[in-house]
Length: 599
Image (cartoon, rainbow, N blue to C red; front, side, top):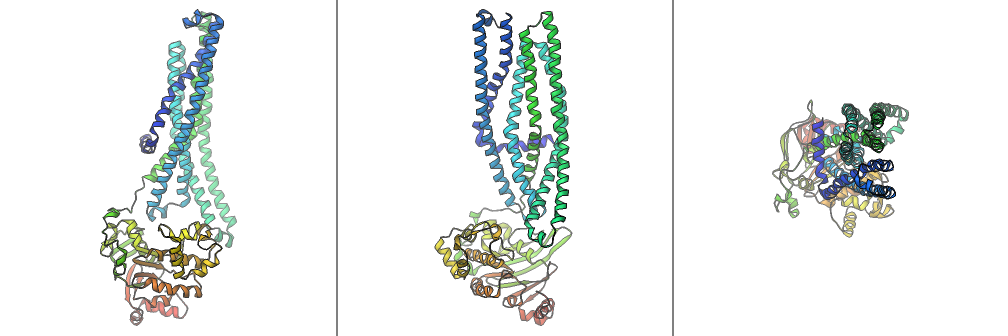
């Protein structure tokens, strides 16, 4: 575990390179801060020694009493002010570097999470991922700001104090240093146990956030089916488990603090006992004894601070571990060749109507190894052909679209667009060629205009013209501010049909080679669907189209129909050919004509 900690902390060190100058200054300040702190007990002890006429330094014995006391008070005041100034400057810089560090890590975590395939996100609840992006990163910022540099400062302070004590009186110095051994052993012993307990706390907090987010997202269903009490009991159970996990860390945290306090009191008692005998015997001055009593307090102060930081330090190491696990998650779907290597001819949108061939060649895919979804699937869609996908629920229609968009990778087989394996195409280029209209439309918070543009630079006038051509004028006129109307989360202030209209519009803006529609008009009323259908016909003209539909009227107009069952292509042909065939499609079509089923 320790070696992994060093490896992961070292990996996070690359985020500090931009602040290396400020870090060097922070580290250099540690020495004068430690010296200023270490000299103060010595000055107090020397003041007592001067009053008794037994100062350790000759220069103090040569000065008049008042002048010697004034000199000691002046140096003490300077050391206090210098230490306060340097500590303030150091703390400010530590916090500033810590915030920049966490900002960079959070940006990388977000980018990395967005690059991970849907397979990863299928098994990682959103609430758990959010915990890593928020709570864990904040814990890392806290441990860097008050822990990492603080530990170095405490170590330097201990080292300076130890050297000073050994120089002033080596016997009492060794006595005090020996008391550090049991404290160090106990800290190392507790570190391993606290680390495991704290990791469990983070995991249970992730589950708590996941449950909370799931209930908020499904609030409508919770209320409609009167699940408030049941879900509250389940959430309370998760909260109790989290509380028990937290209680497991409290024992270790309180134990180390109490033990350090006990050892520090014992050390002071030993110094008083042994130092008192030495003063009585005349082998030690009272001022020197006072110095060591103050040193015994200063010596344990870094350890007290370490105990106070104990929770933060272990929480930070746990955060480093969890952040490292996420950053080490392999990106399953990535580019093999850079975008600039795509030829100008292939990227020339003027030839869009002559392109758009789609080929599936012996494709096999499963979300789980024991549950195959697509089995040895092969077919070819010619450029400009309008193809409908039909089949029972679970036959693999939506999965086929996900594979074409390279949201998942097939276990075997190949997929081609215009003769090029999609694995050999840059992902951004591939997805630019595909226009997807999903049944469940997702809209971002922001205005309508931003949701239509997304990543495409287009002027407002041109955007209005496209919306007018697509028949969106009636929708935009209903909105209070037209294209500038602010949308709530997921477009909550629009109906399902209105969200689908915007989804079709933002695809049309991109002028894709291949248009993919997954029941795009499912939530539209007949009037809206009729208005949009004319524009869809124009959008589909001379363009390759893959349509997943359950309505017979939509399927009948397709150039070809592919019928899937259990991930296999069992029938293909025109509507009339398949009806004459008398197979699965014919049965589904007949049932739908009777109003008994969907395709």
